[in-house]
Image 1 (cartoon, rainbow, N blue to C red):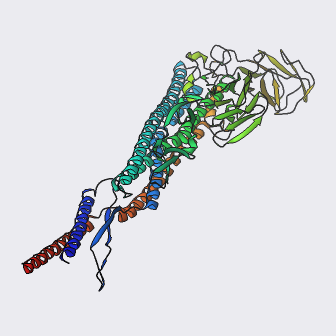
Image 2 (cartoon, one colour):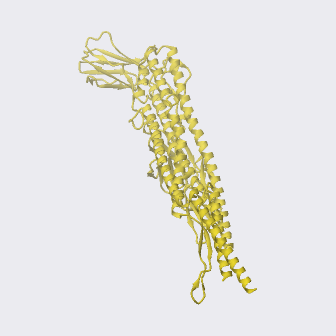
Image 3 (cartoon, rainbow, N blue to C red):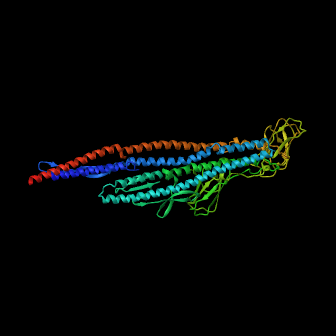
Length: 633
């Protein structure tokens, strides 16, 4: 009986010692990231039948388990992935928002200064200083466009670098998870299935760290290994095996880094929409949803301004008496054929209507018989079978023979801000005057008057614009026209205020001309003080020339600033809300799995008392044994 009491005391002592050790380990790792509280699980040893009943044989330790909730862990990983994605996106878009909305460094002040210079020119068309001021303001505007575009290019390069860094981190985590899968299996196999708690915690912490980089799904296998999947179900870790991600250059854009998946010796580019959550997902979302659109929208303003300003400038006359030329340079669309194309097709694009341009890129795919042009901002698809085609102000033509599966990327406005520049340097080439001048013949006896006349847009392709034309009334209701290029029509019916158009100009006669009254329209010789075209150029500032004639230059830029600002605010609000959710979820997990030092201190005292009591039991057993020995002697 004494030996039985001794073994009971020994089991109690071992259980108390295990409890003290486990509690001490909890206290030591209270601040260790990912550590889960551990507890000793013990049960009563099998009792022994002594005939008069069963007597207990002490206790046994079944296992040391960690307090861990799979559901809570999954929630935390998902919330952490969403939080990291929002934070990554917000950190990037803040840079764009601050740049575009800057009251001194944004485009708005440069745009206002330029048109102020044009207005000063209209007030003093013959003044060389006023002309130089307008030219300098145009150069400042070009510098601002180019500067903003350069910053966006630098952001794109930064995103490429961060994507490469994130991919390396993801691959590192995947390798460590696979190694831990193997280590856990071996450790638990050698321990007859007992859980390798610390290794399990390390693996779960790695999964949480991986979720900060990308959204990942875990499928736990029967042997305890984690299989990890990303994207649209692509495996990242299967047991002890890893499938590495890599970066590659986009097939249709050499300046763009894409994430690819290596499988069976092939490299497959993963769609940006499939890689969500985490830092990597936030970077990809920022690039596709904000950065690309911002650069395109800025380019659209530049192309729209340059094209419409040039069109009006070509309708004017410079100080040399010549028709105006282009004031600004205008970018051409960027067209890139995929590096995987096997056909000989070559696609070209040009801007035919700047007002109809959107801020979208387009992807052209050929299926062997038809072409599908996808507008990438909204997914709208236009299908056709032949070229040329004009869509959203962009004219497309194709030479050669594309093969089925060939594709092209069209970016109509991405180069707009980069290529925006002043095309002239001589102030005398600014076409501030109108190229024609109308006059009433001094011998007229009627009350008829003629307007100043205006040049029709687009400019006439012939050289008759400035040829003298005479309008002579043969009666109060009819007139003849005489001049080169007019065809010299006779007996035309007079309608007061109606357009009279020849050789690319239009004029209106009002009042009551008398028979034999004449009016002339001819070249604006010596019109250095004429500012009619400069006034029309200045009026472009408030004209709805962009987005199908629905907004001004400033309006289009303000839409860009507003869009980026609203998105930044949305991300900030969403990040704060997701952060609060993450905090509450982590608190709920820690209340169950975390180490509470007050609780552990209580456990330590409890196990200490149990240890002391077990020692007392063993002491009593020893005394009983000694008593039996004494009686025997």
